[in-house]
Length: 172
Picture 1: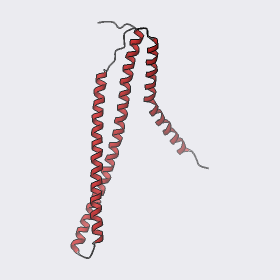
Picture 2: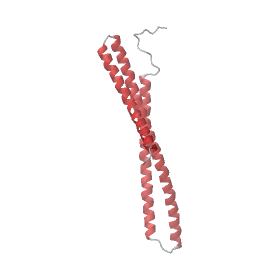
Picture 3: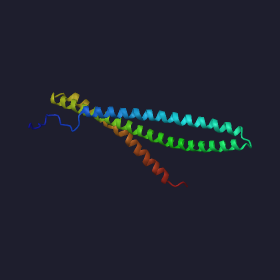
Picture 4: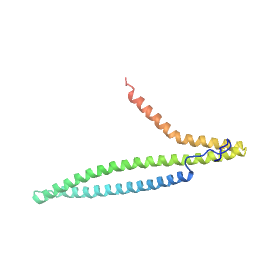
């Protein structure tokens, strides 16, 4: 077994191919979530429109006819049930929106890791070739990517902290 010397590039536990495969799977899942969201929005819209038309039509023709009254009661129950279903669909849409957001964050993070991995390798090559200028540029690029990955999380933490501080402040 060969011993690693200080000039060898460090070994990595995962390959760029593995990260690319994960990125591809994330993109496939994001497409599925988009399709689910689109389908749920369409279903909810069609059901609400259809049942609002039914309810409006029967409200105008309401009279003392017992059969009509029974049909109206049945339709009102159906509209109520569909309204509940629409609420459940709305909740599911929110969950899918959150999932899509999480997938996008994971995608961005994976892309950043791939960029850092590649840049570390080019930096090591530059150092092996005594090309300090290119190595310095690669290090600056790594710092930039790390900041881009961490900045949104830091901003969210600051907003969360500021929101907490504002809520705890007494109004005089």
